[in-house]
Length: 241
Image (cartoon, rainbow, N blue to C red):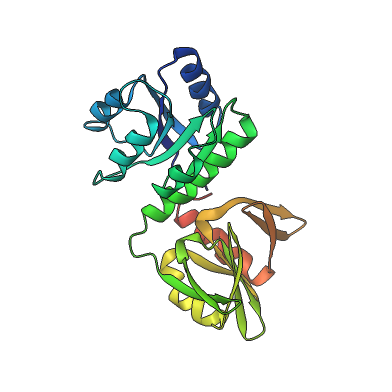
């Protein structure tokens, strides 16, 4: 039911640190291939013939350092996501200015690394959806845009729809029926008269005494009896269960 495992490349000039981070990543079921490199130059050589989804790079390295490497990667036509891993926090502002996915402090804690991997999964999914619809949402007199690819599930709120994303919820004045029709091709399925879910974010499906529920981004959502069979068929057809 989950997306394809990520291929990652760990970059650090210190072999023990590099091996430890590679081992931690290899324990995560969302990670498939784990490659290693000892320098920024080695990374660029490898990317010429081996595509990867995410580069986890140290910052302080001789030659091409992690910040410089991230800037070069940002200019590649098929660029992997970048997570910077460092013992120093003074680079954080500059790092996010060059669009890195995350900035992880050493010593790396497994739970913090798991958060970074989760961000990479979301960023890779959004990157794979070039048509990603942008939805205008208003809050406090300010209009901002969110990507449809960031929406995990939608719940009806009277005349409004509440869009649930990793960075919070957003109200839009669009009927749920309209979103169901418009977003069907993107994998959104009705599971209840008041709820749509994006099936690629369904991590678990539970059956208990004939009652069905799904887990989306850690939230349990009830599936009505009339939509249970349709949801299961949809997930089976997409190879998600």
